[in-house]
Image 1 (tube, one colour):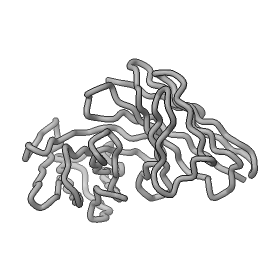
Image 2 (spheres, helix red, strand yellow):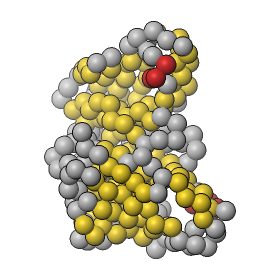
Image 3 (tube, one colour):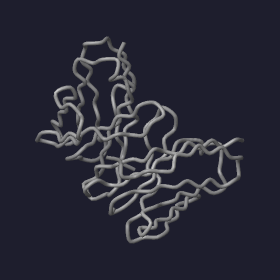
Image 4 (tube, chains in turn yellow, green):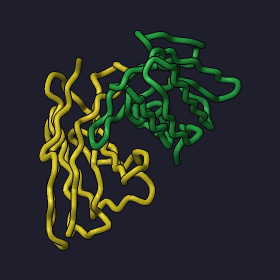
Length: 115
Length: 111
């Protein structure tokens, strides 16, 4: 089956710094990838749609200047949490799917802890 | 906004028993998907049922979809300890693979 990877799996950073998370589709090309955030014991919340070669589309309430998304190639999207604060601590998960597959494949997630 | 919403449940069952969980949603859908998440991990796609399907099987999984009631159920038969996980349903937002997830059901299978 299709594989999506994320890096890093876990990151701890100090408040005020920026953190970059990578999402890669390993065996298919993805013109679109999705970024979700999950707080402990809660469900996933869609943050934004990453579009290859164009600007990301953000969900209502998500600050685009804080969560920078770049989709520079058909297999890589990056999410940068800028000026991170403790409330940004969360589990960030990306997904992608082969064209016309109808289903999404999720990365293993990145645990971000901001101290 | 969340379109897929399960009745929040925390199931604790004995190995070998069946586990049933439900999901309701609010708008029309193209399909509904179920995912499993082990603690602290990513999601694993379990099954997708299209809006013109009423029931679908995959191994020990059985999914039903009632579009008139805007609800779905996931049945895991003959549960195993390895089935211990959280289970989420998800529906597409606007038909472009953007997913809205429900609250999730935590299932604990006791060996």
